[in-house]
Amino acid sequence: MHSVAITHLEKRFADKTVFTDINLTVAAGEFLTLLGPSGCGKSTLLRCLAGLTTVDGGQIHLAGEDITQRAVQKRGIGMVFQSYALFPNLTVTENVAFGLKLQKLAHFQIHQRVQQILELVELEDYGHRYPAELSGGQCQRVALARSLVVQPKVLLLDEPLSALDARIRKHLREQIRAIQRELSLTTIFVTHDQEEALTMSDRIALMNEGQIIQCDVPEQLYTNPANHFAASFMGQYN
Ligand code: ADP
Ligand code: MG
Image 1 (spheres, rainbow, N blue to C red):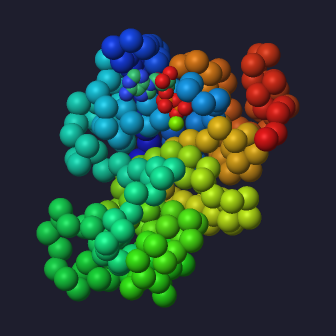
Image 2: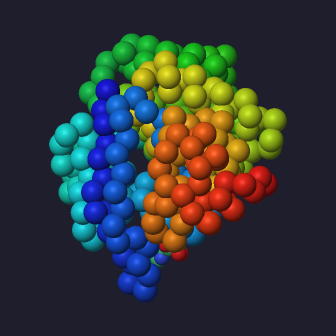
């Protein structure tokens, strides 16, 4: 189990300062949601954690180790995006196994790991299908499987449900949470949907314009918003 500690994190693009002082800790095994309106910096923060973009200041610690400058492949962080970006010409099994290519595993080990993970996301009967033959929800479960198969220390989920229709979204919420609990996987989940955050999270970090406004358990955010922004944002359902 691995905790995450973000201190004084700073990120600028040439013409845009996204944030200058993000401080956030996620406990080992916790499911924390980054919630906030579009453009507030959620994806940028996740990309900094994953090492997909450089940071301009501050530190990221994973299980006590400073990983701020560590290469993406060596961080042990898995990430799932809103657009699942599966390889269309590979089967479900091949898509999931792809993550294991860099690890020197024997064929039977790869097969075993992939089967285990496909069972976990309830797709064990879909291994031979191609992405085009799957629903959006099933594709997102393949993407989840692909990031889980390498046994990440931390899982980052960037609006993984936003592109799906309401009924599937609800089922996937529960499924993601069940898997996360089963693996005791430290998870940061990004959404702009208050209801999603309130129903799924151990804690919610509410963001606006590059700042964390309030970080607390869902009940507190809902009943005790820290300021006017928090009150109006948490009060509106979409
Ligand atoms: P969110 O995920 O909360 O919608 P983002 O992290 O995607 O927000 O974006 C935060 C801000 O950073 C936005 O104003 C966005 O336009 C800007 N931004 C994101 N990526 C880049 C980039 N590569 N270059 C310049 N600005 C960017
Ligand atoms: Mg985003």
